[in-house]
Length: 427
Image 1 (tube, rainbow, N blue to C red):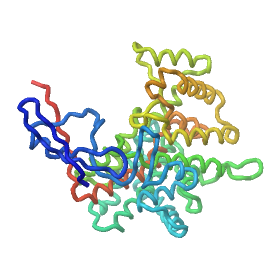
Image 2: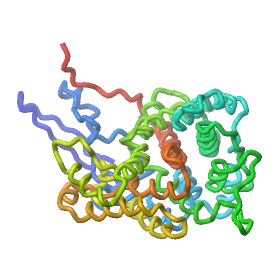
Image 3: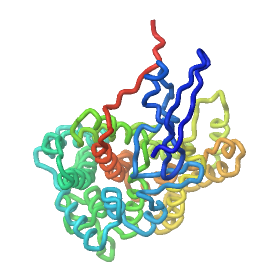
Image 4: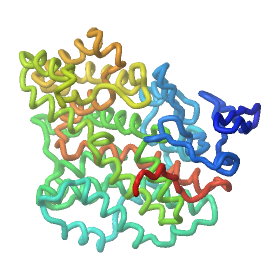
């Protein structure tokens, strides 16, 4: 909504130009510079889009200074501690939390949509065993566009929802298949008697034929505690405003590409170590540090301006306070420490790093607080999940956010194909 204008004075010729100021329902207002080039003959320059709003959105809101994250206006702490991942999915897709009946129907539909076409299964088998699960997953999701080409042009809400629910249901299956292919072991089909998160752990862990390892008491080796922990991680990853991969999804969607191709592009973007691959890098770094006795040496390296070493899992592009998702995972990690026998050595190293970061002036001044990646890797390790699967798990959680943002973009009548300009410095 237009509330005011801003006047810019061009120092070259004294010309005055007015631009509309648009107020947000939360957070900073924005200056509408759509007519900037027309009025001034210049482009704006904002490397990395640090001060640029690329769209209007009602999905997710972040207040980086307060350390606040909201899905559809609901605080992330409430969603992660009092609701399931599927409830968060429904909220993002429909803007309201589901009733009991709506949740049961939603859950049942996802269970039945979790199977993939046998031709796609054979395609996944053609990858070499050495392939990273993210590579297989991105390719598998892109291939879904061939199996469900009818989603290229969606004319009504029901068709859009079918597309969205289909991809949310199939992503865990593709991720589990990608992991088992990377190990060279047979695939385990979904079990419709299991919940969304439990089913994913089942497809990762089951023996050929679907048999599960059992405890001495004859209890199946997927505990409710493990399901709750992973479900919480999915919820915390579900959406995060206009981050790099979400921006990629929106930009690819702006070309009119198939929705699943846009999602596959987001998966590729998420694979980067500066984005979704950071939690894998955190564990690798903790293993490299090796011992609590070595922590001070690596802290010194991180503080040395002449050393390229960087501590993974600290700081965030948006949060200038504690990442609210990290707070939730820290509490979860403390709860799980004994029940899941978290790696005591990795925990000790991580605890010492955290202790220093929260008290050392160098980290405090630069607002380098532990972020979600710092804690999620340790928890996923405790769930016996291979490091190579950390980012695919991020994909499972974030898929609902991507598809929600994509649908919002397609429903915006003012949306255009993404086409940034440049500051040319060549010959």
